[in-house]
Length: 289
Length: 328
Image (tube, rainbow over all chains, first blue to last red; front, top):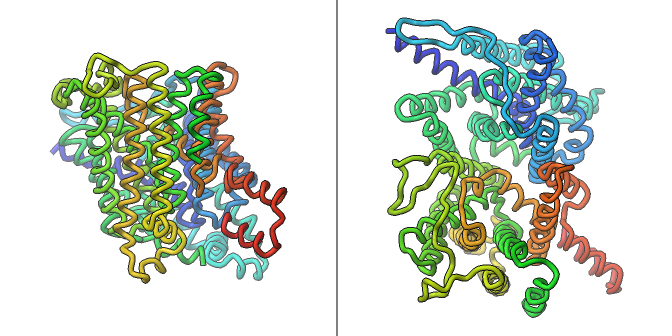
């Protein structure tokens, strides 16, 4: 019984962390069709900002939930203005430029923080369930993921802002005719996506030892989750995060964590093979025509 | 082009030491393999490093088990080509789109990196070769004269072997591109549907081209293993994959010379940057990639070519325009 409870929490945690890792990319890639290969580095920066803020004496939750997302959103705005905005509609060029950006950020982090592992301790203590221990922080991750999904759904579906954003992504010319500024909306959407990446990186920071190259660990997972998810932003995110989270945990429990990761990636390759052109293939077509 | 390449390979050792030149020649071959697959075949392979790494690991494992280098070299290239053929068939017969292909090749590279990094310990032994996890495989027999295992090829001799291989590969790639297969490959890059309707088997041809590219990358990897005398999972790393693409982008896709020059110049730049500690290497590489994509999206060689044509050859305006369109 205890084992089942512990495993249940672990499964939920795996799904929740995938949701967190992918949310920022889902907004940038799913809505704007911008393939941001620097997504992992946005998360890495969020983590470093959190750690720096905590070391300066800021409360860890304030640093994670407010400072890191805001700071990364600012970085996102600069990146959008300087680079991404020139490349809308040029899919491959965007991928390459953001890959360059990712290397650039890794370099910057190496220069500032050095190529060593830094970290902070988890702010929530663990507790025992029968013979097993549960990491209390897992509950926080699950909570953040649930709140995030709810907030995204509410903003996108219920507010005027969400409506304008979705409309602009579908037909920016019509949105412009109606008096909205597509440039501004694209910039804001990218900033929101960056903020979500920053939040994810910050929230996950206490769980991992952070190095400048940490982003690489997230990028593949984020991409396959978003791509396998498909055009329905939120439903896709939830369904694919659940699928991959369960696959990952199953193999982690039965074999080893590394095999769990490998299994996740292999499952992704097979899934994409079975849903060719897939789910989001149509998007790219519509965009290029 | 080959006629120019031979004197260049002979003159260069007078200028730069042969140890550095060897690795530049290997990088150039690796870049050429991506230039063939991406530049002429239109296949967005983000994971060329996977085949480079597989070639290197294949050679190391083979050399340890056979105790001899010729068979190991051939086996490494053949095994990598076989793996690439299976992967390619899976992707192309699945009719995956460009972007998915890019992501899948990237993911495969990551899988290999993760897996190879975790292979420490006694559980992971292939014949006489221990995979060694993050530390890689050291101490395998390096290249020697075929049939004479005690006559090792190293130093200047290794450079000439690598340079000769590069020239040979370049000549073969040129021949391939001039053949019917090469022309159809370029046709597929330009318009896949039209080539399919003309009766060419697009999927088989793409798989074959992908496999050839992987074999060239594997050869580069096997030579790299000989140069470095150790293979580590870093060969599969994202940085390695990114670097190959940077070389090609800087040099220019759609040319044979571009990737080679790009690899040699960027490789040398990296070598120079490695000698100082003021600026981080990755930072500079990232910056170069961003700037080239933004300001020189066609790459150096095509841009210079265009400049050359504009400056020296007074073409009729219409022909000039067509040329521009072709390059774009």
